[in-house]
Each structure stands twice: as C-alpha cells, then as structure tokens.
Image 1 (cartoon, rainbow, N blue to C red):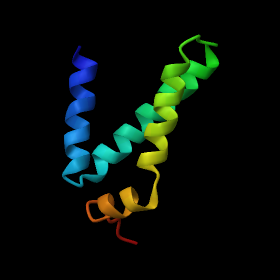
Image 2: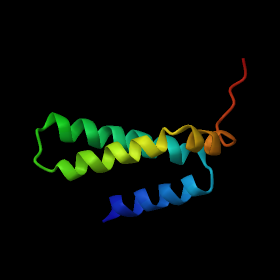
Image 3: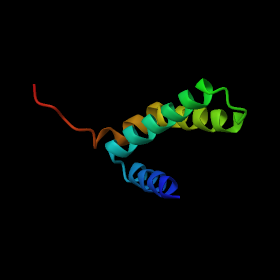
Length: 75
C-alpha cells in the first residue's frame, strides 16, 4: 500500500516535470522488469506493464519534458 502511494507521488512529480521523479520511475520499472524476468514469474502482465512504462518514460518527448528540471553539474 505504501509502495503504491510512493509510485503515485512520483507520477505526480513526473507530471510537474521533476527530473528525480522521472529517474525514480525509470529505476523502479527496470527493477521490476529484471525481477520479473529473473524469477521466471508467470505474471506476464507485470512484464508488459513495465515494458510499456519504460517505453513511455524513455520516449524523447518525455525526456525533453523533464529535462528542464535535470540537475546541472559544474565542470
């Protein structure tokens, strides 16, 4: 239940254009996908959902949208 609230909060952050929310959701989707494929789960819906989520997060339009909030490192 708390995990769902965290994902919803991160999704709201993504809608506001926050780069850390985009990074968090990308890491969560990759982690879920690796776990589902690594354990040989029968829940292919999890795999399909995470592949769709990653394709939307990694789309050029989404990356451009959150780019304005990306941290800038000097050097």
